[in-house]
Each structure stands twice: as structure tokens, then as C-alpha cells.
Length: 121
Image (cartoon, rainbow, N blue to C red; front, side, top):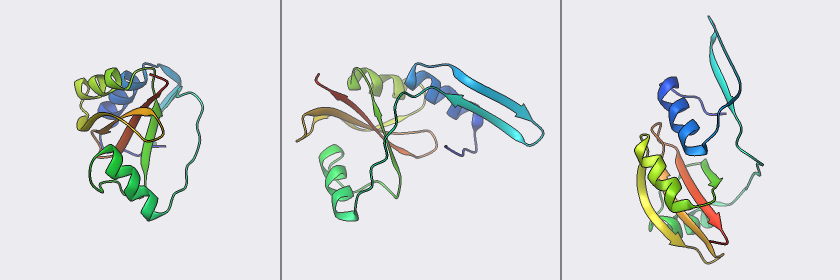
């Protein structure tokens, strides 16, 4: 779940980035919610040292906070281009990682660090 100040901007950003439509959405006097299909999810828990190593590989310096979203894509370069077209900021272009995936790093319009990765490219 991403809490945002600008619901419409974030909704448009993630729908375009993921290339998906709403699974469900609702609006009331209590607020707005959209649920997007995003494939299979995993949760990685890393210590500060390893988080620093990932940032160093993907960006060249420590930039992530306590949360970084990683999204698997068929093509990370296309994903990074799409992210920029819909309001994201490219913080590092596609690079091959030691674990042999191609990763790009973008900053969402709300300031969330996002790794766009493609395996077997």
C-alpha cells in the first residue's frame, strides 16, 4: 500500500508503469482506493550494510530509506523510460548487477525509490 498526497498522479504513474488496470477501486467520503494487479510479490528484509551495497550497485551511492520497491519487468530500460514519461525521475540508468539482472532506479512522483529489474535479458 502506498499512501500519497496526490492520488490521481500516483494512480496514473503506477498504472502506466505496470501497464495494468484496476482490479478494484472505490471512492467515498472517507477517501479513494485503487487496487492494481502487480503480479507476484515477495518481501526482502535486508540489513543496513546490504541495503547500502544494493544502492551502491544500482545508483552509485546510498539513497534508499527504510523502504524500496522493486518491480520485475520484461524490459527494465523500457520500464525506466515509461516511468520518466509519467512523472518519475531516473536516478540511475540500467546497469547489469552481480546477480545478472538488468536494473534501473527511478524515484516515484511521491519520492519512493523504485528498482525496475529484468532477469534473463
